[in-house]
Amino acid sequence: MGSVAVVWLTGLLHCPLASAGEESGAKPGRVISLNLCTDQLVLLLADPSTIVGLSQLASDCANAPMCDMARHYPAFRTNAETILSLKPDLVVTGTSTMPVTLLAAKSVGTRLEMFGPAHSLADIPAAIRRMARLLGVPERGEVLVKAFDERLARLSLPLSPDAPEAVIYAANGFVTGTNSLPDDVLHHAGFRNFSTGTGTGRKRTHAMSLEKLIAAQPDLLILDRSGQGTSQAQALLDNQALASAFRGTHRVNIPASLWLCGLPQTLDALEELSKARKMMQGDGK
Image (tube, one colour):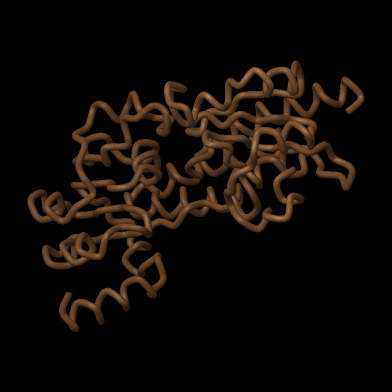
């Protein structure tokens, strides 16, 4: 990459994500999303006639809660050719987008806006509002945010120092640590995150052996399923020893699609965990 491109790209990646034009309220006529999480926000907020295409992950129901709706739109690869050939008014994507794609957007005068991942439930209303402004439908964003805030308030439970511990267990034995959206959902459901007390809790994800998990016996096992369960990595979640160690109210399944991105649907995960917490309270836990 030439020196001029490097200077421009460095400036782009260090500038504030929201730009002055974002507040203008102009409605783009042709919108493309190149990221799973921005796909969902576009589907929630955009006028259907303005959606030119979404990422290839948008129709993957294992990860995308709005996969059925996404199948009505073309799916594109996250690359420069998509932007150069279609010349959309607006491209929305994640912060890990390849630099060459960013340069392609600039070369054809396309507005490109990057969204970072949500690390807490508090990040979700801001992302909704921002996307709504970019799409020229701020009122739609406010309706979604109001409903989100009201539901969050209804579902949230207090987190006490002696709250039960929960562990989020995924394929290959990965557990979810601190500074992550699932970790914050746990706290709002009245659970302490077991993995943050294992000595590696500062990491967002880290591996934990089946034997260590069973020996520690946290109060709630949350199986985070992100695939169809046909691989050896996924099969670990159906291990008989795990099933025997965590029974009844001490075990729950949460689809990865509910908290892979920060969305209104993330509150479906909170609702399931809040129910689990209340059931455990009924058992005297």
